[in-house]
Length: 324
Ligand code: IPE
Ligand code: IPE
Ligand code: MG
Ligand code: MG
Ligand code: MG
Image (tube, rainbow, N blue to C red):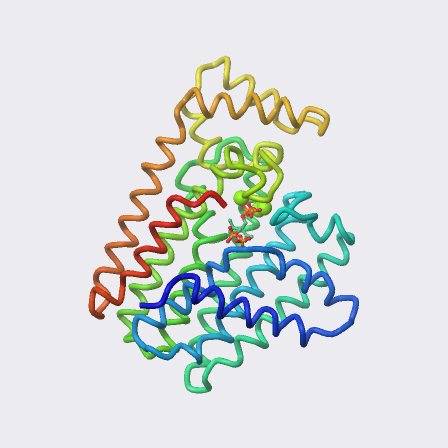
């Protein structure tokens, strides 16, 4: 059995090569900058691991896997503009280091490059692969639009939030699983089961991303601490806090909505202590666990020998305990 690190190293080598062939054009400098920052490479690794369930040789999946990472990094570059985020992977975001127009344009270039790389999928799979990729990419945009719209709304339900994170985050994880499976020649039934695995594990992943945004160790997470609180994001934590807190705490949350930047530190501290007093971490982990279980159920039904699934199971467990 291969290790997770083995698949990560395959991707890192391809990223190094991708950076070497990306020339001196100004527009490509931020592309190389963001993609070289230390990252988990979850989506390409999952695409390779998904393929490896069905095929020992995963060579044909490497460029499509790289395409997924390039696409993901494009979404991060634009997400950081939308979220007004100063830090990414422990370093200045592209719009901070350069400027917003540069981040928009380099992001656009990256999206095109993602398509160029995805087109290196084997010819007989190309139509199916591009179909999954394009559907996924559009869904991510829809999810991102809802994420921003929710900042301004006061009546977002947990169900709406769940659908929003399914779109902005989990469909790309699911799409990665499916693209790997398609290229490795899996049956349609198995492709769909792996999509389901990715969709559920992706939701658990985003729930924990929300938690780490406030409570994670900033040195490991590499993002501005409490960025979601500052931006009035309707995260799982905030929605539960609004639903479960007493009148006094509800007023505190309300008071800080849209507060000026000078209040950032006290806002983050006040809202985090409301989260803590309500023990929302337990609630969030219970929610994560139910999505994790649904992911495992889907994986169990995939028609390959159980020992081939061990690495994916290990990876999913790692997602539940990650600190970055
Ligand atoms: C961050 O993704 C964006 C989300 C969807 C939460 P990752 O947590 O996978 O970030 P990197 O690629 O490892 O930096
Ligand atoms: C990002 O969600 C989802 C996409 C990039 C599409 P977040 O805004 O929570 O991601 P981070 O926390 O900035 O990485
Ligand atoms: Mg963000
Ligand atoms: Mg965002
Ligand atoms: Mg986040």
